[in-house]
Amino acid sequence: MEHPLISVILPIYNVERYLPLCMESLRAQTYENLELVLIDDGSEDKCAELCGRYARQDKRVTFYHKQNGGVSDARNYGLEHARGEYITYVDPDDFVDLDYIEYLYHILRKYDAKMSICQHRIRYSAGTVKERGALGDEALSALDCLRRLLYHDVIDTSAWAKLYHRSLFRTVRYPVGRIFEDAAATYRLIKECDRIAVGYESKYNYVFHENSIVNSEFRPNKLDLIEVTDWMAEDIRKWYPELEDAAVRRQVYARFSTLNQMLETQDYLETRNEIIRFIKEHKKDILWNRQAPRRDKEAMLLLLADYRLYRFCWLQYRRHIMGKR
Image (cartoon, rainbow, N blue to C red; front, side, top):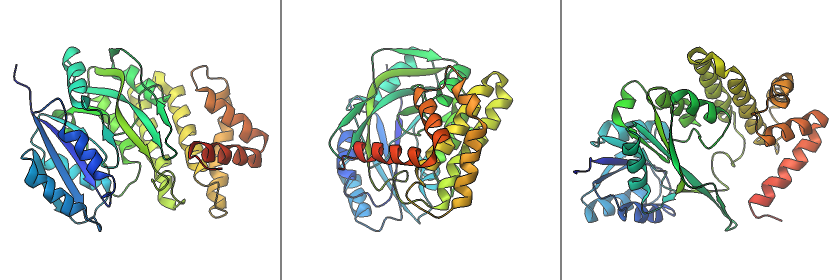
């Protein structure tokens, strides 16, 4: 059986330190009918030079250099130039297992699906690895997949660790000028599917950086997470009213996540207070919801007790996972 062309799109910006390991993992894939689409989004380091070298060394590599427009713009640009029947995204500061593509394609064909998902490991700067995988695979309906996404139950909003039939993108693009852009697109791609193939093995390695968007200094654009999550919740309520509780849970989570990024700044006090007010208004929606994760309930109880206690506990936890004393 002839295997279809699969396009791997990398949105690249100032990652010369990490790009070689990522490309090494992709060029050695067990699935060989690949197109590696490198989009240099106006990098100021040596990424363009590296990309040009890969294109000369490997005929499967295509290289495009464009003016900086952000990760969404780079992903959309890559999609417009990709030739494959199937699409997957890989962030160039991460890397994948050698059978990443083969695994995603195998379960997609097994369940006759247009989208497949695998799990990922988290690799912290301290050298520790959090394994999130298990064994097995199954097919989920769009409704069940969205429910699990809203509860952070195995399914997440990341663009990576997924394989898509390109037809799913007929009406879906990543919103340009936004961060947390994948949250605004992944749920819509799921909705386009009759079924989604979900594999529980980890095949993607997410490298947790101190200077990542989530861990960098708070800026107002980080409020994008709340806005795109509210878009998602509103749409899902229209499509599946039975997911109301799950949608509220996700909105509360987005505000907890944003609050956690504001803990080391004394600015934006009005915004912080609005976030805390929203969370507290929905305390029953979390504490009385049997499907809400335990961490949500613990976070809610800490915040209800005292903001300073909540802040102290979260900062201690973050220092622990980053390997800081």
